[in-house]
Image 1 (cartoon, rainbow, N blue to C red):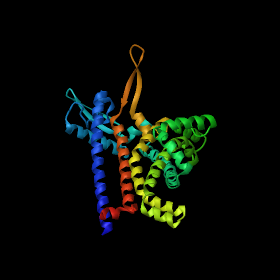
Image 2 (image 1 turned 90 degrees about the vertical axis):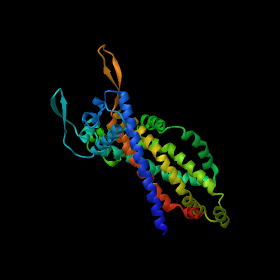
Image 3 (image 1 turned 45 degrees about the horizontal axis):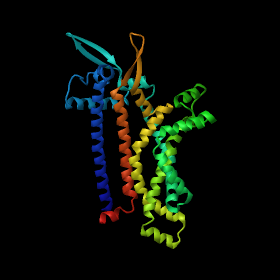
Image 4 (image 1 turned 135 degrees about the vertical axis):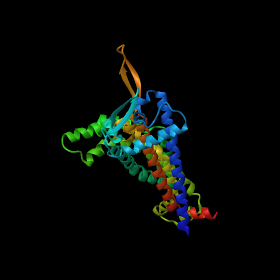
Length: 361
């Protein structure tokens, strides 16, 4: 019966997340269309307009929803191997036919990478970072919250500083310290891997070296932030009766911390879930800075600025805005956040030792 109740609650949370996921995609797609109109010349930059699926001259909510549908079809189409698409247009009574690349071909020709590799690079960067942040943040936070001492004082000193400094700043610091001073790591993931491949094949160690500075930039500040969060959760628990009883019994610190970990872990998972999107955005900035071909690198190629030469011989700035590509990045981010939120919710229901007490109250 208990498992059934937990299953129903979890399904309810999943349905809620799905509804939120759909709303986010609709709002994002409509916002991208409005931005496209502001940029101008949608027939030159929008894949959906070129294919005839979206009419830029039409207005209204129905047309915008149709545009979101086309954006979604393009995003799913980048994973399909399809032939070129035949387009028919009628102009002054004559019908003209021409081919445009399929979404996947268009994506690969533009970025020189596959969408699968782009997503895999971002996930790899996040997993490597979390594999360092999670255990070190938990250990430092438990120790500082339980025993206090110098580790707690250092954490209290660093937390306000590190929480206000973005990840890309630490990337620049590590770039100067490791790459410039000690020739460790690399300034460009793509260039480093290409040089290695030119002399043979790139192995796993080569990819780790190329990701050394990006991973350190993401983990350096976040270890302190996560540890500070755990420390505050532990400080709240030390006032509970069970902690006083364990202390009076003279239990070893290892057993007390193990119990504290089990108690604060659900709340820590909630914090991790809420902070996930912030970690993804910081990771995308790091990808752009170090040429890591992930979602941040993809977004920077779909949204940016370039210069064209005018008739007077000067250079004028132009805004590069590819709406379908931007929606693709937003879609993948939303999917990652949905999966993260769902997994964390399932772990929360499973690991929280106090949920039965809350339900009875």
